Length: 112
Image 1 (cartoon, one colour):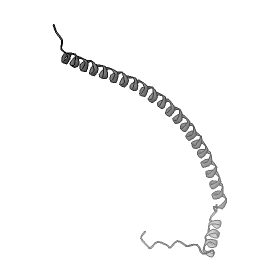
Image 2: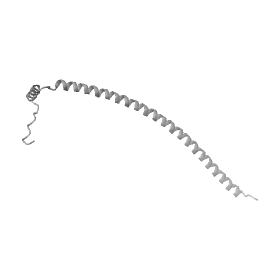
Image 3: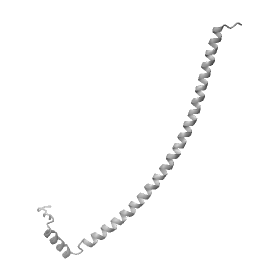
Image 4: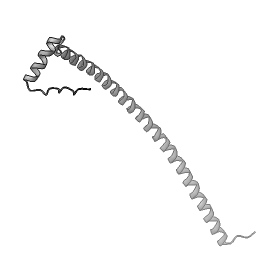
């Protein structure tokens, strides 16, 4: 069997193409492994940040619940203090409201 220079050039071109494909595949495999590793690290980082945010949210919710309870207690105390308890106190409060210029309710027409 005899080989010409043209045959050797074709063989060299085929071997070169195979070498390029093999190195390209190897580099793609390395890059994928590196990207998976980076993605896993990023996921862990995001999980830690999410846990931190959850802790902050729970603290804020707890603080808001305490604040809501304090506001409710203050409002309830103020309303209890300000509300008339008997019919004469209610009439005095209505009269004082009218003296101060507050709008007064209009009576409903007959039949309502």
